[in-house]
Length: 176
Image 1: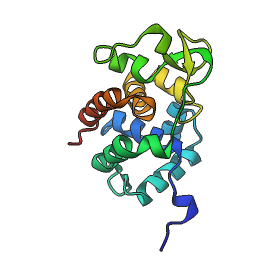
Image 2: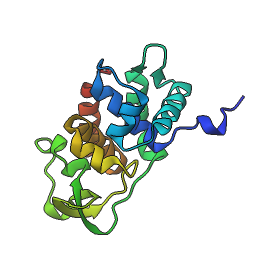
Image 3: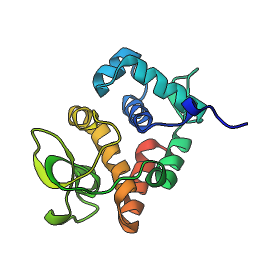
């Protein structure tokens, strides 16, 4: 039996799950999560329903299943939600250019990647984020920013960059 079409993951589902990771055990509502992520409460609710169907979220305990999410991100994100650097743009640094990987990977100015946004603090090749609201949500939440930048490194990085990002992501998600 194949899953229903509406049960397939969407990129914003990953954003919602990563936001829940940053909240740890803090209370939240669909509306508050939606507000922080720049999404509708119904969009957040649907994302968590899909995540539960895909064994990435447990609704009864409201917990992200870290081992499954880590496995998806480390081994599948670049295939499921691929990304490719585009034209030069101003925006918020991501992937190997972001602060989360600053001490781990040396990135030259000509290899900088950014999520296009106004006003943008950095100039680099544009990288389409998992969801249009990502730059705003990341700018408001440093922990979410770090996780999303690590995920982008897994989406577009070279082997060494992906290995470093995978290790950091595993530590932050608490999965071995």
